[in-house]
Length: 489
Image (tube, rainbow, N blue to C red; front, side, top):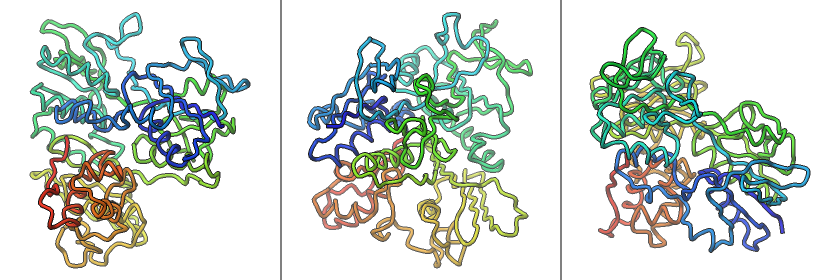
């Protein structure tokens, strides 16, 4: 029997264990999972929905605790791993226990980065009592526990997590201001025009936005606590949420002398280039110079590694990245390279902007294929554009169909119910329309039923309405089918 120890019980580690057991009916692998958090595995993507109050912590659980016992997997939460002993092939826990392995899977994820700003961290190294990060369910609970005494909150950082935190707090009635050093929000994904439209949309929803602002300190002033900026301005804040990005958790791997770049360097088998018995997946892994910070690549890596361990032939070729902002009343998808030279004659750049309605669309086409896109404001064509990007498929001759729904030459139907079986309806889990229809034929009557058998909707949740439409069309005579779904914030 092969002993597999998984360090990390987040979205990557938990998915890997499921994928491995699904391929191991004879129980050839003895699996032990060590998770630093005490929580059951949960969907980190949906933390903003918990903060906003549209979901409970129980509703974002990804793997029921009972599953581990039923599948003969040893799950140990609240366990810190202090050291990897590569020579003896064992890990040492902070409690002094040695656990041997034949294969070690590092799924240690990332940690929130706290910038060196005066007042954020106390002398003992802990965060100030009015400073929180937004990374874990515990962080989310810490913010919720403060709501009763918080009137003004400042979110430091205008990236994906910062905006989700800001919108969630605003939905709870807190006055929120986002302070961001760049000239636009989400500058890694958006161009200047898209950033402006997004800022305008957030302001209309009650979230103040301050750009080009560098924080200097967080301290007590004449009118209470506040964030001091480099221009001397002071932003009042009973609560400061730090969302300045993350850093891969590589300390354990570095101490074991594994090769580290920005994260743990792995090959196409998701194996450490230093040690053939150690693997890394998710946010702590660096493959082909790329470190992915999204759920879909982590789950793709989990499936590939499960294949590697069970049949040895699988290889990971990288992932196409689509970033989605999960915030109430804001619908944004960004993919590929949109920072392009408009004078490049080999490119086509399509744009449509309606700032008053919070809409901005930009699609970059090279060699008749979508190589990048920004879709802000809930355009009905986002599914078609994402599918073209994912598959590197040829775009329609009538380019208007990529922006305006209903144009005749749309390159395929825009109604999810009419999409072909091979169309991917849930990108996070790679679930096609055909699989949803098969689930319906097997008796699925709700989106929850489909999720239970296919995992569709259990990633970012952005596909729930489309899955419901496909399911409803597959069971037109069944009035119990969910025809409409409220998409979580």
